[in-house]
Length: 361
Image (tube, rainbow, N blue to C red; front, top):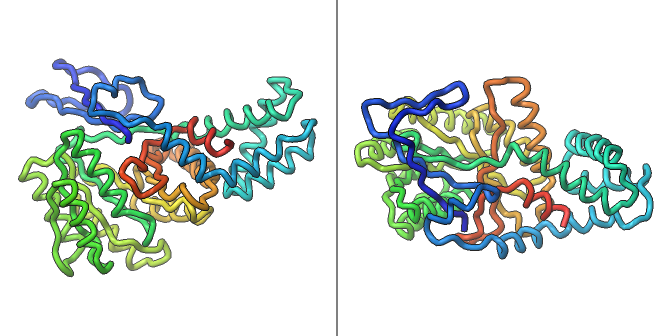
């Protein structure tokens, strides 16, 4: 289970690097709660009882075993030659890395091999892990709540990606970190969606705002308004699943975002897309479409415990990098969490190095 820790701001304002400075002289500084990445220091140990990641990492490696085995086979030869790179190109494409990310990784790998003066294929595999981890590194960022009160999180995605389940797991961990949460059942299209979210609300002992057959935007507005009035730390809005090609439904998501902003001008503070890790390059298409419509702030990648190949994260990382290069005002879209199963502890923070090693086994 990933852990939370509380970090109190010092009493005097401290300059913050970057374009935005937080300065609230008339009120006490907010409590910031972060979901730390796996590589952050163990200051997080001061929080609630942490659960070792090792078992979870074993399940991640198991879920990506097919990809890892195919790539490992490439390095069983005795020479570093064109044939090795051709086989590696095929393996990466089969792993759903996509053409652009595969070309990027191969060029980077050849540079590293030349600089390191490698002579053994096994050394090339280690350098590939380094290249992949470096490409994925910008996606490794913690989800932060507490800078806004309440922090409003809007969760979107296609049907079956695991939105509601991911919301339930995130809510549980937030509640365990002593953050008060209010849920908005804004998925009024899918049968039993409201009931499913209500089960998670009851299980986590948090409040839920819902309306049977109500307008999704109205439910979201009511939830944010209630969250402010009741002093809740976090408001999470579950929305209906829809394909990016369903333009009228995508417009409904834009409406929800606009209406949330009417309830709280700075909200939503996070727009998270839940992506099924089994969908291959289609996952990248979803990220692009939802970002165009809603300006995503983060991703949750689920179901990396079965037939998922995992390479699509490299494609997403390259797209995110190019997106930030085109527009300096846009930061890379991070992967906040990845999931390998249905249990609460199966949703964990994303680590670029851990994922690269798991993918290459």
